[in-house]
Amino acid sequence: MRTQAQFRLLIVRLGAMGDILHALPAVTALRKAHPNWHIAWAIEPRWRPLLTADTEGESDQECEQGHPVVDKLHLIPAKAWGRQPLKRATWDAIGALRRDLRAESYDAVLDLQGSIRSAVIARLTGCHRVIGDAAPWETPAKWFYTERVETVGPHVIEHNVELADAVAGDVLEPVTPWLPTDDDAEDWCDALPEIETARMTGRPVVLVHPGGGWGAKRWPPERYGAVVDDFAMRGALVLVNAGPGEEPLAGAVVSWGHGHGRVVNCSLEQLIALTRHVSLVIGGDTGPVHLACALGKPVVGIYGPTDPKRNGPYGKRVRVLRNPESRRDHTRSEQPEAGLLTILPESVMDAAMDLMLEERRSPVVDGDYA
Image (cartoon, rainbow, N blue to C red; front, side):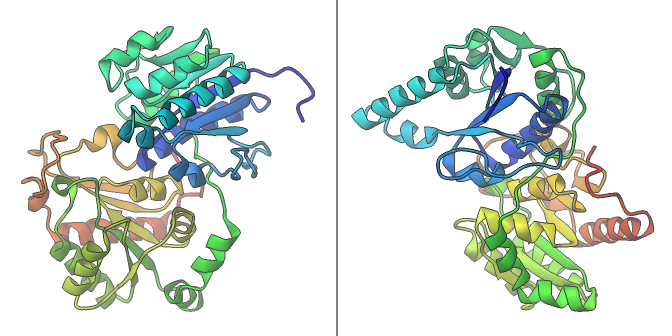
């Protein structure tokens, strides 16, 4: 129970996985600078495990500073509402959300999403301070803000830190985001044959993420398969993650890798646990790759139509491969982008081996994020 009046801040970042992970360094920096603040977060229910809260939406674990990064969650199924906007149940739920948000009496709301949807949710609070980017993702969102912040940093993580600066006039730096530990997920991870073998033999475990939001961002499975085969021949243990609906893709990678590697299908809690225990992560522009960065793991990113300078792997343990001829394009094409196809398995292996060699020579201390 709080014993004194506290500044009450609401973060609005509903999804998706990578975007929430890009917001966490800024919010963790705010928590570190202001340990006595009451910080809440509005988020889609499926991403709750990234912040750790019980089913009632209250924080139930503490970060390294001894305070929860987030004191309270507002679980908002905004996508589900969008699919049934005219249903009475949707309007009833929005009305209940408005009452819940106003009852919290927030002193400020920070919209780290920059969409019309997130800006509307921010205004539902009735708060007199609604802070957002002067050039949000969806331009009309800015008209919902009472304070508009000009951001200049090249990466979205730096944008979010600049927005966080505006809440109390701080000068913050990106800090290692704190992520939850789930005991059941840790037990599941410890029981995986690859993790047990790595523990006994010291062999590296490589986690491959062949999926992505749409086809233009996905490096071909036969090329991932060549990388899997090469790592296996070098003695590494390889796991290929299958996100929801990606089982055929992950299976194709293993098949192209001559049966080396193993498909693993896991919950978000389990993915966090697994990523903590691997030696290297390889993938494209997808949430699990950003998770690896947040956990301080060495990452090789394979990029095509999305710009890694803005939302690519962030930190000291990264190598990003991208053809300079690739142009930023969010068209939901199913065919791999032309520049992406110029990246060969040999280049990915060279980057991976260089990164792992550098790690052995001069390991980065866990938590040294920026």
